[in-house]
Length: 171
Image (cartoon, rainbow, N blue to C red; front, side, top):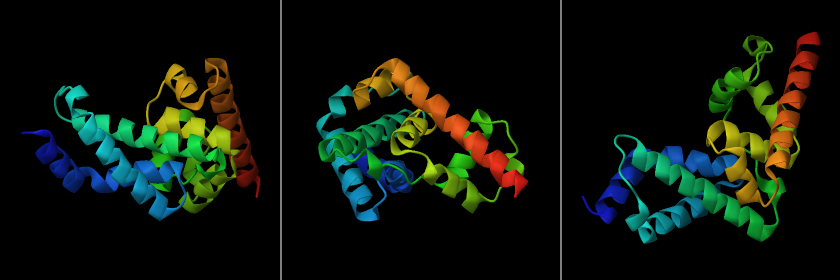
């Protein structure tokens, strides 16, 4: 299968998922859709760099491209504050792996609200690390920060979330 056919099929099969990747970084749906389109253009232009490593490898490659496309957009706009919308179902799964504090007593809407309250830079690092599987080295490179700053932002995000959860449980 050539690049065009493979990307067409990926768009049909994984387009909604890839749009949700973009929505984690940009709040506005129209902007996320633009990022999805730009990401597919980038994938087409870089098709020669894709290495098929079996089932799921194209989806993973496209997810990285979408995340990088959104990060480049945010850097260009100097708008880290735009990064943010995480879907609550995906976040709950990731948060359960990252935080051990009583997530079973929290409604999805409240957990989602808590994540949106995180400072933009912490929320972005949390998203990249937990959802996209970026390493601190990759996050540092993408955001133009030090690895230690990436690790500290992730630590702070988790600590803030843990405190919000404790406060929520007291209410």
